Length: 284
Image 1: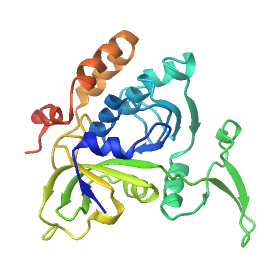
Image 2: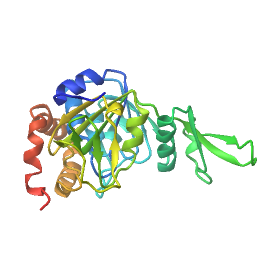
Image 3: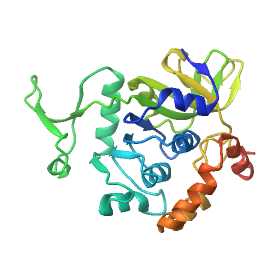
Image 4: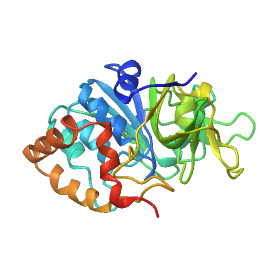
C-alpha cells in the first residue's frame, strides 16, 4: 500500500547499501530528484539497472555509489558519452565499476519477466551480435515446440525501483502519461517502489481512458516533488532542459569540476529546489 512521505524519508526507508536499484525513465520522467536524494544519503555498493543510463547515473557513478551497472545504452542523450562512467570503467575512478551490457530488447523483456515473476526472459534477439562474448548472462535455449534457437537473459528483479510520474490520487494510485518506457514493468518487477510525482489530485475521474495507472498496492511510497524529473521533461508540465545536458558534458569532463558541481547543485540542494529549476520550462 502506498504511503505519502517526504522524499528523504522514502529513500532512507527503501534503499539500502548493496541493493539492486532501478531509477527508470526513458528520455522522459527521469527520477532525478530521487537519485539526488540517494546521492546525499551516501549509499554504496549499488547495482544500478536502467535501459538508458544518462546524467543521473553518471553522477551516481562519479560519486562512487555503484558497484555494477546493468544496462542497454549509456550516454548523455543528444550530446555524447558519459564521462564519469568512462572514467570509472577505464581508470577505476573513483572506484571500478562492473558492467553488464544488453540490447534494449533484452532489457525490456527482462523487466517484463521480472514483473511476471519469471526467472528469465526468452525472446528472438542477439542474432549476429557479439555481446554474448563479453556477457555470460546472455544464453540461448531451444524452443521445445518449434526447435528454434532463442535468446535468454535473467529476469530483472530490483530490490527497489524509483520512477517519476505526473500525478497520484489521494488513494495512492499513480498516473503516468506520455512516453511510458519501461517504468510500469520496473515497478511491478521490484520488491519496493518509490514514486515522485508532480502533484496529488483527488481522483482520476474525467481523464481520457487510455491511461497508464499503477494501482496503490504496487507502490510503496509516494513523494510530491514538482520538477523532480529535471533536466528531463514531464509531459504536460515542463520541457526538457537541453542546455543542462550540454553543460553536463563540460562539467563531467573534469574530476575537480565534477566534484564542485555536485557539492553545489546536489549535496547543498534538496527536493524543493527542483520547482525553481523548471520555472522557465513550464508548459503553457
